[in-house]
Image (cartoon, rainbow, N blue to C red; front, side, top):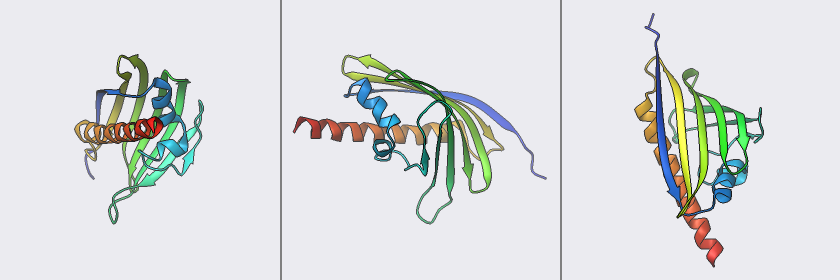
Length: 152
């Protein structure tokens, strides 16, 4: 039998986006908008107690399942959700995530905090933080394109 273990860790990512807190919040709270920078959800019910569920991964590669439950939503200020991540049939992590939206001189300061338990060595905090940074960069690219479209 393989040794089972849990590793607890936290990471924080802070980004400044040249968009209003309302625009950045909408990028998280509207399913069509979120699908432009995040894995398209198979189910998206943005309300306290609501679920966001998606499956996907690299073409021809393993399937990852993201299954989230919204715990708290403060419009244009904060989203708190818990989620599990599975790799095929294996649970690799369980996390609590807080996304804060604050006014900044250049637009919005986003503070993303994830507290996770990473299971049996299938994932690590370093891997998760790297992947989340890539996703936050995709959000920034989306917001930049939207800003250009709005100006024209």
